[in-house]
Image (tube, rainbow, N blue to C red; front, top):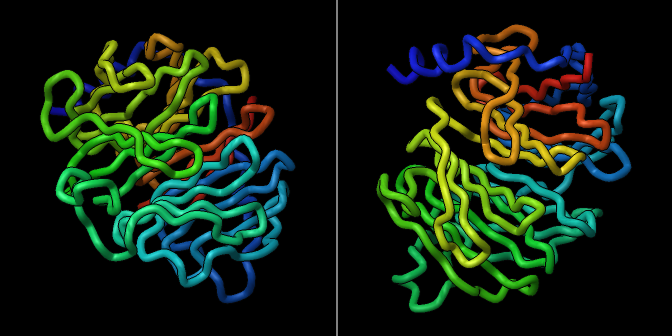
Length: 298
């Protein structure tokens, strides 16, 4: 029913005017991607790929030439990957239950959570542990938001000061406004509003900076990844198992889409997370097809 509803919604949507660039990544001999959970693009155009294999976090130049691996041995199940305004690398791990901040060279600067220990925030007395952290987003003063709960963990949003001090949390399991079922991605818009891809509830929810519910928008399927476009007036969304890449306005209305389910060019097993470069070219991490595809404006 979800798939049928999604197809019906998308039939009258204009095609997003992008085309696929053939596989650009040149991996070292004998090295392959594992399930690709996330991707990010540095200010210099270098591409970071977060993949579930021994190399975990790999860096490539804009042409796809392999440069180096970062954080080897740190991760159990790579999930989310973001870059902050200073170029620091932030990652989440849903099995190790940690959020890791690294500098641009891969030196670990901060670890939040206790590796291998899952504890809901309210059971810890004060926040020491996560339970399946998914994604990260940054506010205008360096504060950051972490979504957690990928299946077994309690679904909620946790807010921290720039130095890692725990500030507040909201959410919990459920379908009501302000509750979540797998809050998979988080994005802070130019107004400081917090947008959550509430994946298994098939919707996006919007909150103010303190967690007050503002509105929601249904998106049938599995909304997975969110990125703000360079004009700060549009959002790109990776729509999970539908394999669709969608352009939204800031009211979360669907404007255009491309892609589909499959294993060919611009097809995805699971369009898990995505990233944009300075030209709004799109990089899509596919956790089932074990690759990252690049889409450029046609």
